[in-house]
Image (cartoon, rainbow, N blue to C red):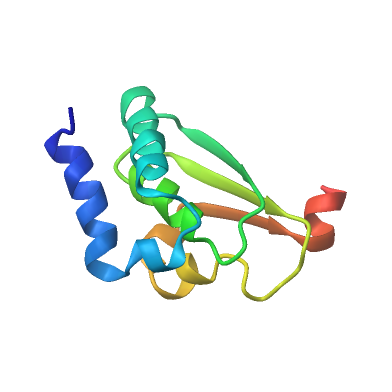
Length: 108
């Protein structure tokens, strides 16, 4: 059963960007991950590898209403495109992203 909160999560993203066009996650995968987040309300999520960050957006959008929750994303590359969508398209969500990339990630 999809509740009102979950519907709002998906509509927030869909209204701003065509997820299916950019995200590597299928809709059933996005639904699954959002239901887990809604049920367990984690304070910390670790993401390994993020590319432009569309998967990150799914996670960030789901945790944004959970007080003091953060997504820690680690990527060994140092590309300027890492986390692009969070930073440039969803700046409100970018505030709860902790991004570690390149040598910083490997040496921390």
